[in-house]
Image (cartoon, rainbow, N blue to C red; front, side, top):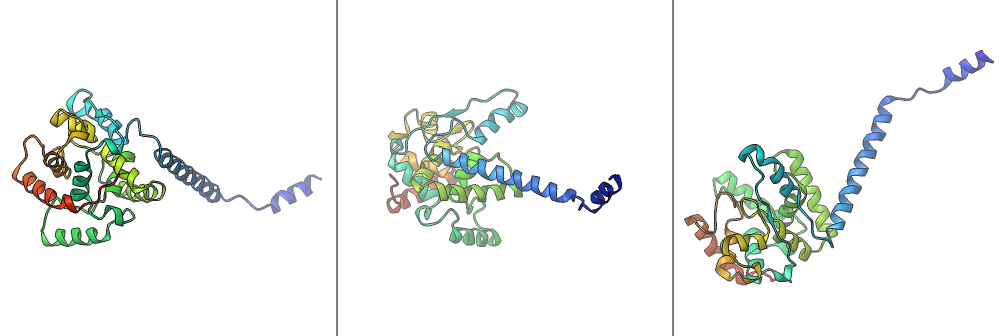
Length: 243
Protein backbone atom coordinates (compact mmCIF):
# COMPACT_ATOMS: atom_id res chain seq x y z
CA UNK A 1 0.00 0.00 0.00
CA UNK A 2 2.80 2.43 0.83
CA UNK A 3 4.50 1.73 -2.50
CA UNK A 4 1.26 2.25 -4.44
CA UNK A 5 0.63 5.53 -2.63
CA UNK A 6 4.12 6.78 -3.44
CA UNK A 7 3.62 5.83 -7.07
CA UNK A 8 0.31 7.76 -7.21
CA UNK A 9 1.91 10.81 -5.64
CA UNK A 10 4.86 10.56 -8.00
CA UNK A 11 2.53 10.45 -10.99
CA UNK A 12 0.48 13.52 -9.92
CA UNK A 13 1.40 16.71 -11.84
CA UNK A 14 3.26 19.33 -9.79
CA UNK A 15 1.61 22.70 -9.36
CA UNK A 16 3.48 25.47 -11.14
CA UNK A 17 4.02 28.44 -8.79
CA UNK A 18 3.65 30.93 -11.67
CA UNK A 19 0.10 29.77 -12.31
CA UNK A 20 -0.87 30.51 -8.74
CA UNK A 21 0.78 33.91 -8.96
CA UNK A 22 -1.06 34.64 -12.20
CA UNK A 23 -4.39 33.70 -10.62
CA UNK A 24 -3.72 36.05 -7.70
CA UNK A 25 -2.71 38.81 -10.09
CA UNK A 26 -5.85 38.42 -12.19
CA UNK A 27 -7.99 38.34 -9.04
CA UNK A 28 -6.33 41.56 -7.83
CA UNK A 29 -6.86 43.30 -11.17
CA UNK A 30 -10.48 42.20 -11.26
CA UNK A 31 -11.03 43.53 -7.74
CA UNK A 32 -9.47 46.90 -8.66
CA UNK A 33 -11.61 47.17 -11.80
CA UNK A 34 -14.78 46.31 -9.88
CA UNK A 35 -13.91 48.80 -7.14
CA UNK A 36 -13.26 51.61 -9.61
CA UNK A 37 -16.48 50.91 -11.52
CA UNK A 38 -18.51 50.99 -8.30
CA UNK A 39 -16.67 54.15 -7.25
CA UNK A 40 -17.55 55.97 -10.47
CA UNK A 41 -21.08 54.59 -10.53
CA UNK A 42 -21.73 55.82 -6.98
CA UNK A 43 -20.59 59.34 -7.88
CA UNK A 44 -23.08 59.39 -10.72
CA UNK A 45 -25.69 60.31 -8.10
CA UNK A 46 -23.75 61.40 -5.00
CA UNK A 47 -21.40 64.37 -4.62
CA UNK A 48 -17.98 63.39 -3.29
CA UNK A 49 -17.25 64.33 0.30
CA UNK A 50 -13.72 65.07 -0.92
CA UNK A 51 -11.52 64.21 -3.89
CA UNK A 52 -8.15 62.49 -4.01
CA UNK A 53 -6.32 65.78 -4.83
CA UNK A 54 -8.04 67.46 -1.87
CA UNK A 55 -6.84 64.70 0.45
CA UNK A 56 -3.37 64.79 -1.09
CA UNK A 57 -3.24 68.56 -0.66
CA UNK A 58 -4.19 68.26 3.01
CA UNK A 59 -1.71 65.48 3.73
CA UNK A 60 1.30 66.68 1.74
CA UNK A 61 1.30 70.43 2.35
CA UNK A 62 2.50 70.27 6.00
CA UNK A 63 5.81 68.91 4.68
CA UNK A 64 6.15 72.06 2.55
CA UNK A 65 4.47 74.78 4.61
CA UNK A 66 4.55 73.25 8.06
CA UNK A 67 0.78 73.29 8.58
CA UNK A 68 -2.43 71.97 7.08
CA UNK A 69 -3.80 74.51 4.58
CA UNK A 70 -7.54 75.14 4.60
CA UNK A 71 -9.45 73.31 1.89
CA UNK A 72 -12.35 75.36 0.53
CA UNK A 73 -14.93 73.19 -1.20
CA UNK A 74 -18.69 73.71 -1.44
CA UNK A 75 -20.75 71.44 -3.69
CA UNK A 76 -23.63 73.08 -5.55
CA UNK A 77 -25.88 71.70 -8.30
CA UNK A 78 -25.06 72.62 -11.87
CA UNK A 79 -28.14 74.84 -12.11
CA UNK A 80 -26.76 77.00 -9.29
CA UNK A 81 -23.61 77.80 -11.27
CA UNK A 82 -23.81 80.94 -13.37
CA UNK A 83 -24.61 80.12 -17.01
CA UNK A 84 -21.82 82.53 -17.92
CA UNK A 85 -19.29 80.39 -16.05
CA UNK A 86 -20.62 77.20 -17.63
CA UNK A 87 -20.11 78.67 -21.08
CA UNK A 88 -16.77 80.27 -20.16
CA UNK A 89 -15.26 77.00 -18.94
CA UNK A 90 -16.31 75.14 -22.08
CA UNK A 91 -14.96 78.00 -24.23
CA UNK A 92 -11.64 77.96 -22.38
CA UNK A 93 -11.06 74.27 -21.79
CA UNK A 94 -12.99 72.07 -24.20
CA UNK A 95 -15.05 73.60 -27.00
CA UNK A 96 -15.96 70.17 -28.42
CA UNK A 97 -17.02 68.86 -25.00
CA UNK A 98 -20.45 67.71 -26.17
CA UNK A 99 -19.13 66.06 -29.32
CA UNK A 100 -16.33 63.76 -28.20
CA UNK A 101 -16.19 60.64 -26.02
CA UNK A 102 -13.60 61.92 -23.59
CA UNK A 103 -10.65 62.40 -25.96
CA UNK A 104 -10.56 65.27 -28.45
CA UNK A 105 -8.45 63.94 -31.32
CA UNK A 106 -8.52 67.29 -33.12
CA UNK A 107 -7.12 69.09 -30.08
CA UNK A 108 -4.51 66.38 -29.53
CA UNK A 109 -3.28 66.82 -33.09
CA UNK A 110 -3.18 70.62 -32.75
CA UNK A 111 -1.37 70.44 -29.40
CA UNK A 112 1.31 68.19 -30.86
CA UNK A 113 1.73 70.56 -33.81
CA UNK A 114 2.02 73.54 -31.44
CA UNK A 115 4.59 71.76 -29.28
CA UNK A 116 6.70 70.85 -32.30
CA UNK A 117 6.40 74.36 -33.71
CA UNK A 118 7.20 76.09 -30.41
CA UNK A 119 3.69 77.49 -29.94
CA UNK A 120 1.62 78.18 -26.80
CA UNK A 121 3.42 76.38 -23.96
CA UNK A 122 0.21 76.31 -21.91
CA UNK A 123 -1.86 74.68 -24.58
CA UNK A 124 -2.84 71.13 -23.82
CA UNK A 125 -5.11 68.45 -25.18
CA UNK A 126 -6.87 67.58 -21.93
CA UNK A 127 -10.64 67.57 -22.23
CA UNK A 128 -13.02 68.44 -19.41
CA UNK A 129 -13.63 64.70 -19.03
CA UNK A 130 -9.91 63.99 -18.66
CA UNK A 131 -9.47 66.83 -16.19
CA UNK A 132 -12.43 65.55 -14.19
CA UNK A 133 -10.93 62.06 -14.07
CA UNK A 134 -7.64 63.27 -12.63
CA UNK A 135 -9.24 65.98 -10.50
CA UNK A 136 -11.48 63.52 -8.66
CA UNK A 137 -9.70 60.16 -8.59
CA UNK A 138 -5.92 60.65 -8.94
CA UNK A 139 -3.04 62.18 -6.99
CA UNK A 140 -1.07 64.95 -8.71
CA UNK A 141 1.91 63.47 -10.57
CA UNK A 142 3.40 63.25 -14.04
CA UNK A 143 4.08 59.54 -14.26
CA UNK A 144 3.05 57.24 -17.08
CA UNK A 145 1.02 55.21 -14.57
CA UNK A 146 -1.03 58.28 -13.77
CA UNK A 147 -1.57 59.04 -17.46
CA UNK A 148 -2.79 55.49 -18.00
CA UNK A 149 -5.16 55.69 -15.02
CA UNK A 150 -6.40 59.08 -16.24
CA UNK A 151 -7.33 57.54 -19.59
CA UNK A 152 -8.97 54.58 -17.81
CA UNK A 153 -11.10 56.79 -15.54
CA UNK A 154 -11.97 59.03 -18.50
CA UNK A 155 -13.45 56.04 -20.30
CA UNK A 156 -15.33 55.05 -17.14
CA UNK A 157 -16.93 58.45 -16.53
CA UNK A 158 -17.81 58.89 -20.19
CA UNK A 159 -19.49 55.47 -20.07
CA UNK A 160 -21.28 55.77 -16.72
CA UNK A 161 -22.07 59.51 -16.52
CA UNK A 162 -23.76 61.85 -18.95
CA UNK A 163 -22.18 65.12 -20.09
CA UNK A 164 -24.22 67.13 -17.63
CA UNK A 165 -22.85 65.14 -14.69
CA UNK A 166 -19.30 65.39 -15.98
CA UNK A 167 -19.52 69.18 -16.23
CA UNK A 168 -21.22 69.39 -12.83
CA UNK A 169 -18.45 67.31 -11.26
CA UNK A 170 -15.74 69.32 -13.00
CA UNK A 171 -17.13 72.70 -11.93
CA UNK A 172 -17.39 71.53 -8.32
CA UNK A 173 -13.95 69.92 -7.98
CA UNK A 174 -11.52 71.71 -10.32
CA UNK A 175 -8.48 73.26 -8.65
CA UNK A 176 -8.93 77.05 -8.73
CA UNK A 177 -6.04 78.12 -6.54
CA UNK A 178 -4.34 77.41 -3.24
CA UNK A 179 -6.78 75.13 -1.41
CA UNK A 180 -9.70 76.39 -3.54
CA UNK A 181 -11.71 73.64 -5.21
CA UNK A 182 -14.78 74.24 -7.33
CA UNK A 183 -16.79 77.17 -8.64
CA UNK A 184 -18.56 78.09 -5.41
CA UNK A 185 -15.35 78.21 -3.39
CA UNK A 186 -13.62 80.19 -6.15
CA UNK A 187 -16.43 82.73 -6.46
CA UNK A 188 -16.52 83.30 -2.72
CA UNK A 189 -12.73 83.42 -2.34
CA UNK A 190 -12.08 85.82 -5.21
CA UNK A 191 -15.30 87.83 -5.57
CA UNK A 192 -17.03 87.43 -2.18
CA UNK A 193 -20.26 86.07 -3.67
CA UNK A 194 -21.91 82.85 -4.84
CA UNK A 195 -21.07 81.19 -8.14
CA UNK A 196 -24.61 81.80 -9.35
CA UNK A 197 -24.02 85.58 -9.35
CA UNK A 198 -20.91 85.62 -11.53
CA UNK A 199 -21.24 87.91 -14.55
CA UNK A 200 -19.68 87.40 -17.99
CA UNK A 201 -16.46 89.26 -17.24
CA UNK A 202 -15.71 87.51 -13.95
CA UNK A 203 -16.67 84.13 -15.38
CA UNK A 204 -14.25 84.57 -18.27
CA UNK A 205 -11.56 85.73 -15.85
CA UNK A 206 -11.98 82.63 -13.68
CA UNK A 207 -11.85 80.41 -16.74
CA UNK A 208 -8.77 82.25 -18.02
CA UNK A 209 -6.60 81.19 -15.05
CA UNK A 210 -7.44 77.47 -15.27
CA UNK A 211 -4.26 76.49 -17.14
CA UNK A 212 -2.32 77.35 -13.97
CA UNK A 213 -4.43 78.68 -11.07
CA UNK A 214 -1.42 78.61 -8.73
CA UNK A 215 0.54 80.94 -10.99
CA UNK A 216 -2.26 83.25 -12.13
CA UNK A 217 -4.93 85.08 -10.14
CA UNK A 218 -8.20 86.71 -11.23
CA UNK A 219 -7.50 89.46 -8.70
CA UNK A 220 -4.14 90.36 -10.28
CA UNK A 221 -4.54 89.35 -13.92
CA UNK A 222 -1.45 89.47 -16.09
CA UNK A 223 -1.55 90.57 -19.72
CA UNK A 224 -1.65 86.88 -20.68
CA UNK A 225 -4.71 86.30 -18.50
CA UNK A 226 -6.41 89.42 -19.91
CA UNK A 227 -5.81 88.19 -23.46
CA UNK A 228 -7.27 84.80 -22.61
CA UNK A 229 -10.24 86.50 -20.97
CA UNK A 230 -10.97 88.47 -24.13
CA UNK A 231 -10.77 85.34 -26.32
CA UNK A 232 -13.08 83.49 -23.94
CA UNK A 233 -15.59 86.37 -23.94
CA UNK A 234 -15.60 86.31 -27.75
CA UNK A 235 -16.21 82.55 -27.83
CA UNK A 236 -18.80 82.32 -25.06
CA UNK A 237 -21.87 83.26 -27.18
CA UNK A 238 -21.09 80.31 -29.46
CA UNK A 239 -20.82 77.78 -26.64
CA UNK A 240 -23.71 75.48 -25.62
CA UNK A 241 -25.38 76.00 -22.26
CA UNK A 242 -25.39 72.68 -20.44
CA UNK A 243 -28.37 72.67 -18.09
